[in-house]
Image (cartoon, rainbow, N blue to C red):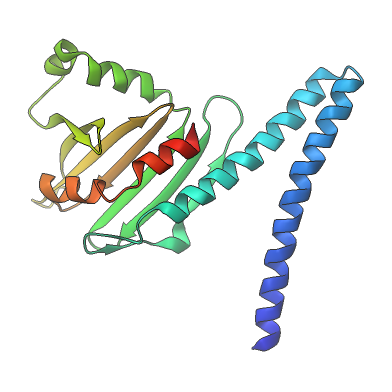
Length: 198
C-alpha cells in the first residue's frame, strides 16, 4: 500500500514537472524561433504555451466551483478541462448528481457570447424571442437567460446561460423549479470566475 501511494505521488509530481517544463520549453522555442525569423514556429510555440496556461486556469476554476448543488454532489472524477487553439478557448465542465443531474460548462471565447449579449441587452429583441419558456434573469448582478425545458418524464428542468466577458457559463439541471435553479446559480463564484477567465 505504501509503495502504491509513493508511486502515485511520484507520477503526479513528474506530470506537474513535465507540464512546467513544457511551458518553459514552449517559451524558449518561441523566443529562439522569433530571433531567427521563423515567425510561424514562434506563433505555434506561443499557442502551445497559452494552452498550458488555459488548462491551469481551468483547473483553478474547478477548485472554486461548489462541491454540492442543492442535493446533488459534484462528480469530481468526471471534471474536464480542454484547451483548443483557434476558434474556441478553454472548455471547463463539471457534472452534479446521478438520477437528478446538473451539468455546468464554461467556454471561453464562445461565439455565442455576442449573440446572447445582444438578446439580453436589447429589450425589443428579447421580447420578440420570448416564447413563455424563456426569461431574462440576474444572478449576482450578471444578466442571463433561463429556459424551461420538458425532460420527457413529466418533470421540468432549466438551462441557464450567463455571459461573463468573453466566456459563456451554461448550467443545465433536470427536475427542478425556477426557484431552485436560481438558488443553485447563486452558489457559483461568478466574480472569481470572471477574473480568472478575462
